[in-house]
Length: 471
Image (cartoon, rainbow, N blue to C red; front, side):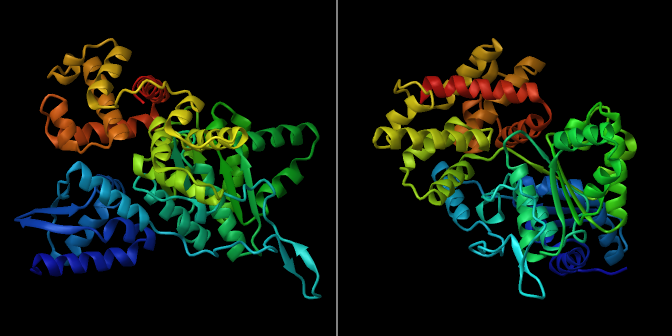
């Protein structure tokens, strides 16, 4: 039996994981792992974020146990915990802003060549390349803002773009409406087209696929339809959840998937929910969706939303004051599409009316009341209580009744999203709760929002109430 100190054991463990995992996954989640303690048959790993802890727990806990057994001959009871220094509110914001400035950008051309959609034949003639004409030219990796909420998803998408059908196949991206799933999917297509122009790419929404299937059946053109979707190298299928209850569409996608996968072609899909939560999906299709990697994309935190707006302002070559950016980012916490739409309305109004972009003007443009009342934790608790018909004192109290617990978790989530207060500060405001309890509530809400549309709509409505009253 081999006995190693913590440092040596960590080095061997990480070396083996680096050999077995894709580079983006290793760099994003594994490289940060440390061995905190080894006590008889118990080994504790630490990482620097709750997101990292969740990813490792979901994706490679058994793999780590197996490697540890290979190295030491022991079967360890493995635990993972987050070890992160506490920060003040100001320090947290400063750190977040600094990290945002250093967010990784994919190694793609700074500027897409003017002849990207064409190639030259052996006779020097320009011919069309196989890029879908329904791609949004702005949906590239270069224009995608990376933050903690989408870091893993971005890494997986970039790995697929660099090595189609070799990195993660299929890639299944899921998350709420307007969070960037289509952007990432089309970014994969743009990158593959730039780096591998000989590959045939097909992008389609599931609704479009279904409509084409119906029309092909009516017109007796199924051979042409199947050739269109099966004689390609990369299939990008958006909003796969719309195959619910469509047996013929599911059957066709099943055979299309099999043909492409067995031929070594790349398949990428997006959905608003995990495959296991798509009702009426046949088991054989669900299992195929889970063959590769499943990556969830969540609602961005305040700093990332502000970074998205700054990035958009730079792309559109416009100057927007920081206080206006923060106002818009605070008012639209759950949907990037709504966030960018609000920015478009603000810029258009100011341009047409030749007015400066001030906080008061922007409040009127995006429908926020001009009453000057500061946003604080107490007002968030009050608004959440009114929505759920629960007293603020009950939300801050110790009751574990289901209705009160849910309202409390919603209020904690909104407080973190809208004020960016530290978890200890939030815990103090919610009846002196421990910061670990607050962190659990926040992370649970983030996960539940992805799978519960009613909850997501409730949070969006409470957000509107709060912004109307407090901003």
